[in-house]
Structures are given as C-alpha cells and as structure tokens.
Image (cartoon, rainbow, N blue to C red; front, side):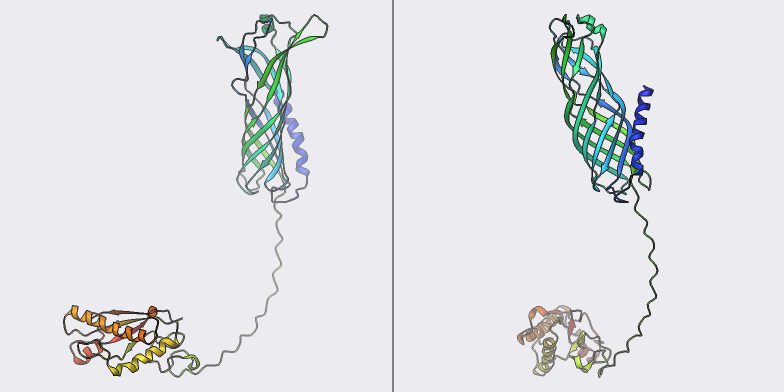
Length: 416
C-alpha cells in the first residue's frame, strides 16, 4: 500500500513541477494560472450496482444483487485558468481497487467473489466566481469521464464452490459518462499560493459485465452476459494545493511632480454702493432703506418685519390708511417671486385670552385676504393668530399695549 501512494505522489510531482516555470499571462489575476491539487479521495459506489445478477446457468451462482464496495486512493488534478473565472480541469488518480460481493436474494451472508481496479480520468470545465485575492474560493464544474477497468479477478474458491473452471474471468467494459464537481479552496496566506481543498464529485460509471467461461475448445470461452453494472459513485476528496502564477507587479513610484508656482491672487473686486448697509449692492437691492441690523435675503429684503397696519378697536377690518403699507408688501412679493411668508396677528392683554386669540386670527386673515386679492398666490402665504401670547412690550402701559397690537410678516423661505 505504501509503495502505491509513493509512486502516485512522485507522478504528481513530475506533472506539477514544470508548471512553476511557465510564464503567467496575467500576473495578479487568475487568468493564465495553473492550479494543482494532490491528496486522497474515497469512491463510494451506489449501494446496489447490478440487480438481479444471475442465476448463471450451469453454475451454483444464485440470483443475487452485485455490490461494489468503496475504496480510498491517491488523486490529483490540474486546472488551467484560460480566463479569470473559467478553467479546464483534468482529474487523475492511482487506480482504485474495489471488492465485488454477491448479496443473495434468498438471504444469508454476502459472498466476496473477486475484485476489480478502475482508473477514472475526468476532464471538466470549471467556474471560479471569486477573484485572485479571495481567501475562500469555491468552484463548480461539469465534464466527461472515461473509466478504464483492469485487474478483474474472481476468487478460485468461489469458482470452485459454484462449479466454474479456475480460468473463468469477469470482464467489464470501459465506461464514458458525465461528471460534476463542487469544491472549495481555502487560502490561509497573503500570497494566495498554497491552499487546502475539499471537493465532492459525481461520476457516471456504467459498465457491461460478462463472465468468460473456458470451454473444451482450445482458447475459446463462452460469454455469459451478466448485465450492466451501475457504479455511479460519489467521490469525496481532501487535498493540498498550490497555485502557480505571478503576483501583481509592484508599480514603481511615480516621480514627484515639479513644484507649481501659484499665480498671484486676483485683485479684490471693487466695492459696490450699499446705501443702507445691508450687504446687498444698491443695483440689485429690491428693498432700499432697510432698517439697520435687519436680516435680509439676497435681494436685500428683510426676512422679518412688522407691518404698520391699523385696525379700529375690537375690529378686524383694515383701515384705509393701512393700504399704503399693504401695497408695499404687494410690490415686495411681486419683486421677489421666490418669497413665501407667514402673516401673524397679535393683540394686547385687554380682554379674555380666548377672545384675543380669535381677534388675532381675524386680523391676520384680513391681511392674508387683501394680499391674495391683489394677485399674490395664496400658496405663498399663510396666516395665524397668536392672541396675547407673544408680547413685545409691557401691557401695563398704553404705549406697550399699542406695540403689542401688531401684524408681522415672517418670511418662510430661506431668502436664497
């Protein structure tokens, strides 16, 4: 047994050694790489390989099921990657030796009638979906298998027991069938060269069996058709592998670029005229004479302002002298088409809180209705009353209460 595995290992080494010297057509990629694996595989044939077998006329062979047992042997495979994901794999092995048993239909112990060797070279197209640098690289493949049988032997004691001449032989035809493989390569190192492999294969092996019985005529044997043996094994393998391919070349560092002399900065732009000091030049200022300190938009218009809108006591009707102020708002909304606003109504604290809330709502709505009637899109406006809740002055004085009775225009756009 030891010499069997030693010879196989030497053969695998002789196959793999020349691959290390071959040039890689795509360094750092799988394309052009050679992948070599060597290890051991177990062939597990189907549980019942020929049924019924026999009875063989003129012999003591009963009607039985023929069973081929499993075996472990040295296997190796070589893959050439012709693209980054597809390659061609050739599987080879040291011959597997299987015992051949008969399991009588009538019951009783299995009868070991002999043994057979087989060699299952397989050529497959494999797909490796992951890239060169992946630590875990699964693959699948399909292909064709050609199995050669040899060393068919029938035990003399069995031949004698069933009344067959000692020179009776079992003959198995070679087989051609489909094959499939699924496996995974585990790369523990950064160089992605050496790896461990586990794989499972299915191989279709079907062979016509004959029993060759010597006759009284010299050299002539009677052929007894024993049927078709369906072996169809699952093959489980563990291997150590080596990938032969050049790593990605290390690019030489690029020379440092020559220092670039920055051009002198452009002269500062000439200052524009800004009469109201709101930060917006007069030539684009839509709201000149903005009060000092007011926040303005890009058109120079305030983002918040108190409207000089007058109402009679306990009334929400606009007084005529308020129309000038409201027309100013109409002009502003037309000049700044992106502006949207919230009209807020406020009261002093005279009266109940509920009454003042309703009064402030009506006053804000009166301003909203006027602006809408002058062509301002209502979608650009909203109105709300806050009653006496947001005073800006002391309600204990007449001056303070007058300041608190107000209508505010609050910009709701960003002003940009």
